[in-house]
Structure formats: C-alpha cells, structure tokens
Length: 222
Image (cartoon, rainbow, N blue to C red; front, side, top):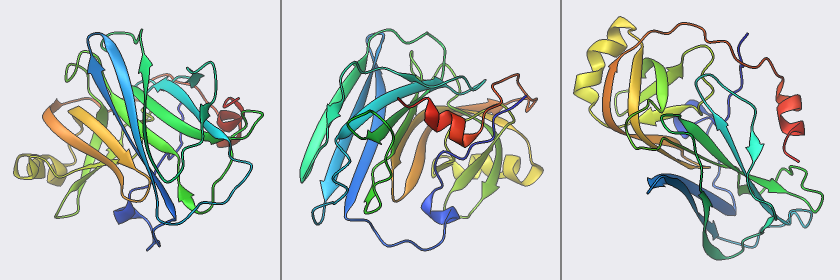
C-alpha cells in the first residue's frame, strides 16, 4: 500500500498565482537532540477568515509515510501583521526524516482554508542533521533547479533544489533514483526548497505505508 498525497506544489509546477495577503514561511532544525520548528508570518494587508483562531503543529515520518500526530497541547494563537514563533519537539526519533506542518485551525481545532493567505506551512528535517535522507526519488531538470519526484511510499512535500546542479544532471538524465540529504524549508507561495548537503544513489522500491485519502488525513487534524 502507498500514500499518494501532494502536500505542497512549488510555484514552478503550478499555474501563475497572485501573492496572497498573508504568507507563512516555515523551517526546522536539529538542535541538541531536539527539533526546533520556526515560522515567519507576514501580512501585506489584513487577512480575513475570522474562523481562523490559530495554528496546530503536526509531525509525520516520510519514508515510509505514517499518520500525522499533533504535537502542541494548546492552539498557537493566530499571528497577525509581522510575527515570528518557534515550537520545540523534544523527542524526535533519531535517523528519521520528519515533515512538520503548521495547520490553520478554528476554535474546535478543525483545519480551515484561509483563502487570502498561504498559511499551511511545511518543513522537513532529520536529527542528527544530514544523516538520513529528507527526500528520495527521481529528478526533473528545470534548468535553474531540480524537482524531486518522490519514490512510492515517500510522502515528503514536493521539493526543488538549486544546489549541486551540475553533479545532479547526469542522474536526472538517466532517471536514476537518489537519496538526498539536507534541509527543506517551505514558503507557501514559492514551495519547498532543499538545501542539499550530499546525495547517493538509492533504490526506489515501494515501501509499505498507510493507505489513506486526503479527506481522512485532514480528519486527523483535530
């Protein structure tokens, strides 16, 4: 079984979009055995959606994909204007690649769609850093960047990298799957960027994972 969910589509793979009134940028880093999830929120004009009261932080493994787990006991209050914040995950499993998601929620902790804000944040990280692949798949060469098409069973967000392009091009041309090591940070408007530390040839064999629909996945965000 495999999961087939596109968590975030980078700008280069999407139709032309107008920048929203609000933007949430998300990153994560390993720090002393914990993972620190950081975010930056910016508004060009006030964002509506009065039902949006705050953010929940979810975590799930990527390879194989497992069920998302909410980490914060209390809702993180909705940001406004220009705001920064952090959440510390004190006990990640070693050598596991995690996706951390910031999900806008209402007062009942149900996910909400904020139409004038790119406000669903993602980051991918491992702890210790660079010792487990944050993405695994084949590459598509867009010239200025490489886009990663994930192997079956891997549910990382769609990522692109501008790192080490000359070294990656022969593998893209040959369709060779790679394990990519580094850090992934995401901005709602631009997508998820991988700062590549190193890579290696990898198998792209389906991995047993959860078989869930997008609706049932969203139902877990509560």
